[in-house]
Image (cartoon, rainbow, N blue to C red):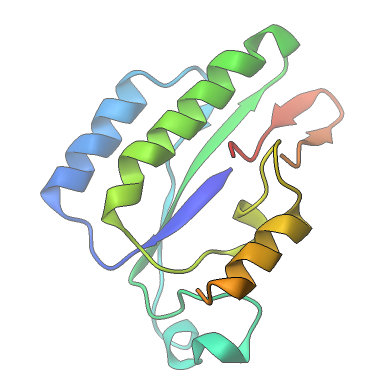
Length: 131
């Protein structure tokens, strides 16, 4: 899973999401979570993650069982998030920072310095931080 914060859901972003889902392998999704309320009333430096003032969180998620599908799912997740990224705002939810090339600790250190894959397996289900 990879994620980003959004201030709004412009029509151009909706078009990008539709395009990415049209080419998504089975088991992939792009969830959008509305934020606000009490979450938005807490300052960014008061808790473990930034982006509390964003209106939405968006992510790319993929689940699969067959190791032969690793490359197609990794590629989709990375390219889908690259297409979404221009619409995103600063900040990250901490569990969406790691990648196969960087540990979560490396990512947190980078985030802290700018202020601003881990592969998890539940039995045979594969999911990823797309990096």
